Length: 403
Ligand code: MET
Image 1 (cartoon, protein in one colour):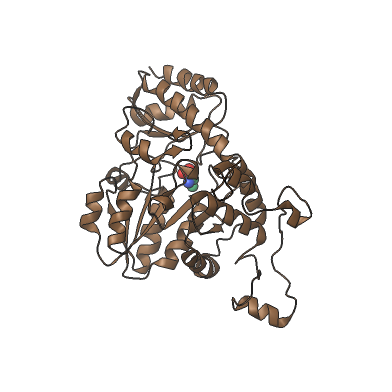
Image 2 (cartoon, helix red, strand yellow):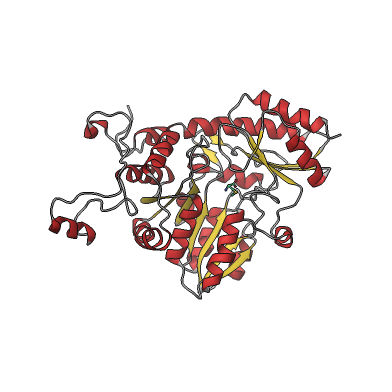
């Protein structure tokens, strides 16, 4: 028997945490509260809820019971106190940063970021007087030299979209703490199945829930988790007043459904990606494969420490590759595929391939892409849940045709 004081396993919490069917008429699946507003029992009660003096919901831009459940469940899976669901991953990032930063504050970010995160920082925050400083966070000493008392946030992705750079969360968090800066991690690629940044010292974790959390390519959503005080502020300021980036209840239901199989799906994404990465690495048309599970991966040691499941290290479902023929060969690879679709997004059941320089990372100028480590020849593969032999066969046929 499980010791009732020990926390339940990941999959158990992903399926049960925060919900008792007997509190909801026995409904096994949680109800979807499709409502914009909430009725008060009296004027006084309404006033008390608005003032935060009584529990209850007011309006679905601020909170909703279906979103509450998702928020609690994601907080549990990430080891955080509280969570806030948003209309997209960018909604989670913008609501958080608009809340935390003031004009004159600095945010230090890694060199490589997802394209729309990069453009929010440079076209959004900078316009309002926030200083955005890029720093090579794969080398923690560069942060030690750059950080100062004007630094309020240190932000990064690990693995980074699209070039798979890893950032040592423990090392960065120690340096950030010494300067009283918050650490915010985009954990979309790894998911809490593989990496739980809060346990390693991060303050906030953001996700595009569109990806592995939802897992089926049928929704757009985001989530941020962290301590209750900060999440409450992000809800009441960044979400309610600044962005209005609200998640719909139906979307929350789909993500709750996705979470139930997250661990199971990640196991398959990881094992298939490992097999695909190994198969691609030995193909003559391939110049390099970036996948944390390969022995050739420069940060393999960090991957082994930071990307681990209850069963041991596992390296995710994302692969980046460079072909000898550069960008033209990359386009020919994509166009020569039969089963694998050319599309942005990731973490779906379907294997997806795309060209970051012209697609997800096109908000960077060509010069910025060079400076930030996103080469024109890079192709990004999100390994899906199909039979792995079929994924490999599709890729090999197209690669063989290149030579
Ligand atoms: N964030 C997604 C990706 O990296 C979608 C991007 S392009 C609008 O694929």
